[in-house]
Figure 1 (cartoon, one colour):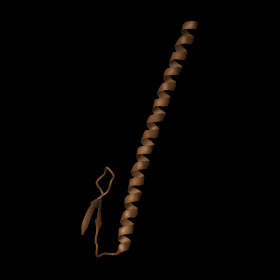
Figure 2 (tube, rainbow, N blue to C red):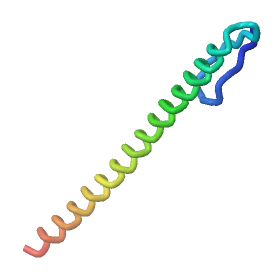
Figure 3 (cartoon, rainbow, N blue to C red):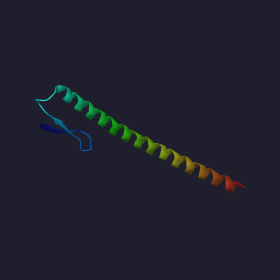
Figure 4 (tube, one colour):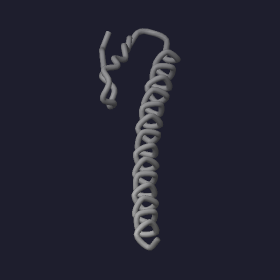
Length: 74
């Protein structure tokens, strides 16, 4: 039996048995691809949340500057 590590950051080991059922190899590859797609989606969601947070931080700063200028004008 041969062990292969996936290309993702998490430790996921795929067990391959050369004398086993070839369908198991396809299942293992499909699981590996699904796992990598899930990790990619998590990273994408995190990046999106960071961009949204930066946008809200900028908007809050803009509103504060505008409010300060308006308060000085009064």
